[in-house]
Image 1 (cartoon, rainbow, N blue to C red):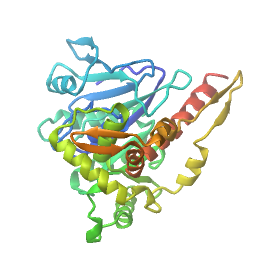
Image 2: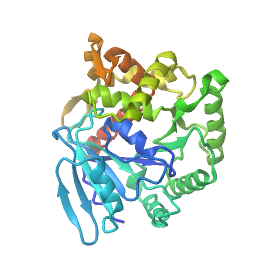
Image 3: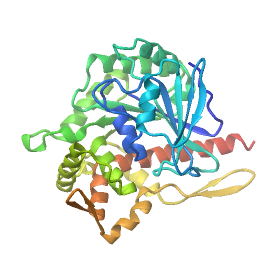
Length: 352
């Protein structure tokens, strides 16, 4: 399956087995209810989401043997329909992802990869095996691990294939890859379950693939998505079930902060110190790029205004602190670090 990438796309490949929570994680990352999510396989095409700061809405394009169309103002329902259309091979979505900025014409492009373990569609396995041979998909990989179902056979097989291919194309297995321990909020802390033990188990598991130095971040994707849904857009289109989930998570994340877990990322302090301003010097010109700081956008929540949703009141500042506690902001910071380094490399390559 061929994808015509633009020259200004910085590719981020999001990989994971079916039911790892990949679609929910991407929705949390982009702050939009864009991808269908659930317990069954929800990604049957290669789908990429391109960040374009100039767009007000998300627009979509579909590609296939007999189809090539563009659509305005698309959402989850339209993507679900495209997923079911066997004439479509790939989907391109373009819009403004609030967590990232275009820099020097370069755009973040998030690619949602079909999981190879979908028993209802054997094409997924074939797609995955072809995809991982393409060096562009190894630019930056975000690999989703299910914290509630770690080291299952399907994941072991998928990760083995990925790391084997990275070694073939001369990629350091741990280089430019972030492991997300998804569904970390499902830990029963009061019953004695804790992140430290979970992370230790994850490190032991990844060591089987020569990934002892891998970056591991526990993330609560569903809570972070619901918090963003309310904060970003003050979106009131919550289902009854989502409303109850939001209330529960709002209370939970005031009591426990996932960012307090030690040693889940070795150089976090170093990264945090760099997330201010940095000058990149090119041979022909000097440009100053502002490294994106997610906390800047949230400054307006320091006013502590209230948001009402179905007879329940949420404080904007408390929501913001709860969002940080899910660790999704840490992921945004890391992606932005890699993105800025990629822009620097591109600038140097274009200026001999």
